[in-house]
Length: 275
Ligand SMILES: Nc1ncnc2c1ncn2[C@@H]1O[C@H](COP(=O)(O)OP(=O)(O)OP(=O)(O)O)[C@@H](O)[C@H]1O
Ligand SMILES: [Mg+2]
View 1 (tube, protein in one colour):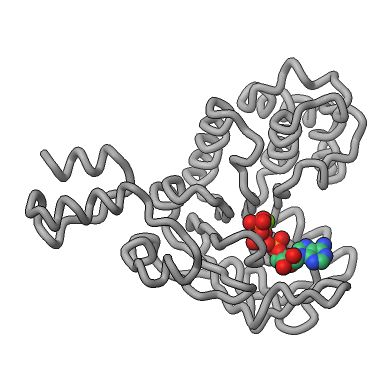
View 2 (cartoon, protein in one colour):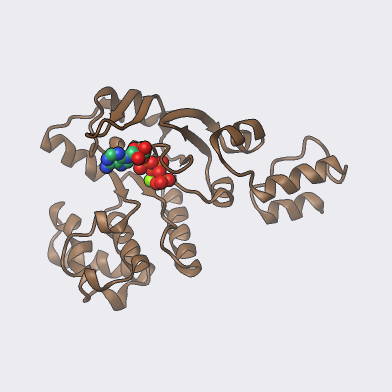
């Protein structure tokens, strides 16, 4: 299996001396759905910013497709065309005056013509329900609308690796569902998708593998089911056991389903087990 992103002995401290990452060694497989989880302040956003070169680690290395990241402006421009990141806070990434200009920015930088860019903008806006906002100034939008504009700006460029820092934050149920659908369609297209989330139901249902951070250190890196079956580790990392897993354990303890039943990822899987 090919690793598209790898880190080796990554250490990162902020200017004020706050250490945020300690000896982080991770490897992310091409095409895999990876969730990075952990409590507030555990280092998720810091790690993401290291993966696309925005943060340069003081120690350690980041590799993209086997090559060490080149921190020259040209190297970073290339990296960012392949590794797109949607920031946790949309105010950190929207800088053009109108929504249309903002979504077009990356495309025009990549050399698309105005006509080509407009085609792509039309299609992503339809998908993300942004059509009525295209002419608006960005600073007039709500938090959720800004989040969708920032998602559109990265998704429209179709990078090979898409990193989404809490994609559901700021969004209402309907828009969150749309975003999760888009995330699924990206995976189906073979993109490598990396997400941070505090929504354990979503992580259980979506992720192939999980990286758990605690105080800037990786405390788990493996299959999603093995994490959620490990109560001790969940407690240690300050994470909740998803209700689906709780129900699964109860069904086993009461003898309703056999001990070695497959681990359910969602309510439909539970229903299938009971049938
Ligand atoms: N710009 C910054 N300057 C100084 N310290 C920072 C900065 N950004 C983050 N930190 C610190 O680095 C550590 C990791 O923060 P980070 O934002 O990576 O956590 P996180 O896991 O993304 O948290 P959250 O779930 O709240 O988004 C924390 O101790 C935080 O206070
Ligand atoms: Mg964060």
